Image 1: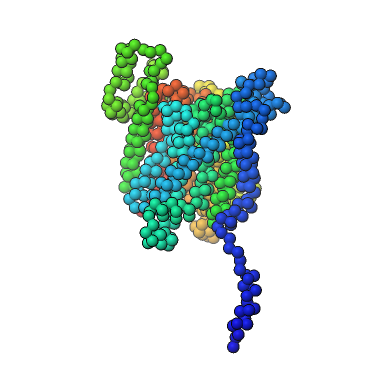
Image 2: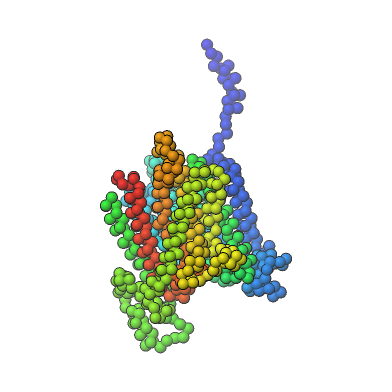
Length: 301
Length: 307
């Protein structure tokens, strides 16, 4: 006969040992992300750029529109002006950082607009399915085949070049892919038992979508969001480059690059510094996005 | 198959109508008329001008007129270039835009597919990382940054190629604009090809082809590449849209006498009919090309052929 009681005594310490502390999906993802050298480097670089942009007023003795009458118009980089000066004798270092403020702000705000529209739209279409889904996604398909950049330009031409309009216009353009991704994920999640349980418990559709479905599809949403930010920054720079985006006295990387491109034969520093900042930022967001995708969706690798 | 094609064709019409309607009403919602100047015109003259451009009619009538005129390729008069109609401007600019855009797409497909296939065949090797690194650069560095740099290096420092201008359409003038326009697309197509090629190379039918002793060259060219190219074909629609959009900037930078340049000038001068005409023209072009790509895709994809 086996003495259960005695064995249980001996088993107890063993059980304590084998009991593994559970790791959540997010902890797993974080560990994988931190192992990805490119993504970590990108995060560090991006934090530095963001900090520099926020601290711009304290990092230089010059202000955005200060004219240094002692400097050359435009003047090459030197001890007083690290990135040189532009045509009007304004310090390029501080202008590049203020440009970073606007470019990053446009990137984040417009992406938030696209996030709100895209996630709500996609979740509603995916959750209700059937005819609602059909009509809603058909609309997205139609929108997809439009040359949106031209509409944004048309908007800018007609309603004036207002920075808030830029947020809204870019957000309104970028939500389509987000809506598609969210819809697909929602269709997968809504068949799970906990949704059925919520429905059986009489929870309203609205609460189910926002409380139960959206938190469960955050992974792909975050990945795509990280990849949308550089697209928006790029689009804003594109508009500003054409002279249709951010207007004086504000500046953005696109504006600076546009001014620099006109002067590149004589004053290449006016082009190189803002262009380098823009390129590095876009690189960083892309690497972080790729890293997050690998971290959150390991089977995709 | 036939029903798919006709359905696809019919769905292009409402899309086009939406484009035209949005553009038209957005333009008419603009604050201030096209003839508002600092100097006030006498009311009789203003009324005459409005009548000449049919701006005194009710909005709905103007809309119907506009759509009707579009059917016969009449985009209306330009408000700034008094002697030209928008149609004149578009067709004057189109040859240059078409050459640059078309060559950029061809270049992008040729180089992009080759690089992507190469990276997939040498997966996880130095070649693979190098190609994907270049592709990442192509995606992260926008063409309006790349274009000035290319000019700086090849035009100014090395003096190999002209910095800007059209030179009556000489080959050397086209090199830089085409490369600048193609680079981001090369990057996207290379990434796309690599992804699908890796998947195809791991699939069963490739294993079968290898198992029956086919030469590696034949396996890659005949079997793998064919399957891997499907996503590239379906990307051609968005690629055209991207090239058309990019051409606006590239034409401005390199001073190419194409549609994009008229568009930007029109946008900066508030020359609404030109801006709108170009939007409608390019939208039509992109929608038709998407349609053609879908048709080609439906012939290529065996899954669609069966159903």
